Length: 243
Image (cartoon, rainbow, N blue to C red):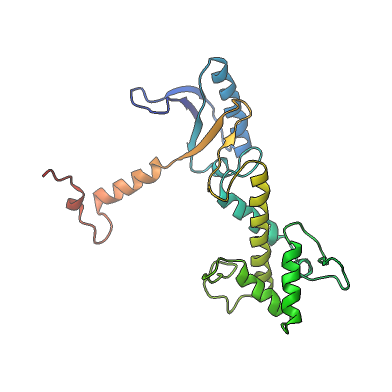
């Protein structure tokens, strides 16, 4: 592992200077954070402004999960799906089932993401003649924007063969996702507008951007293009033409 320091613009050579070498067999993201924190503290002591870190693609969580919470909306989605995947069918069903004679309406298993308005809406549908499960199926349609059709839990556009458990997973995950976004907004992270929110670094006190180096992917694309190229690709069209 080679740690290098470079200016953000990288307009002059040398573009980056190695400052630390570390032999390793396996390295977790948490250890990477620890090592980079030491480097940031050293840079700060030399009055150097630290703006971000560029790592190889294998350190995925560094770019989506900060030290205090998610920095990317896709991480919130992933966390919501993982949380729901651990819930049983009965527990999810109870989260959308009203207690008998409860006033105000309350679910058998309460959760802050399942609001009273959602439970009352489900109750009104059942009073109009829908069964409990039909009201849940209708709720699923309401969890996506108007005019869109919800996909199956596994990502397929066909929901006909989906199990009831996966249907519940879809609904609960959507509600967990929305609740987390609203909760983070109260903490100053507005994922309602921005898909990415840089974390305020504990060492520097400034926004810190985690980036990924895709050079190895670009090299493979270039090598493939030079050797044979994608089918139907005419390399001469890539040449610059001066008029």
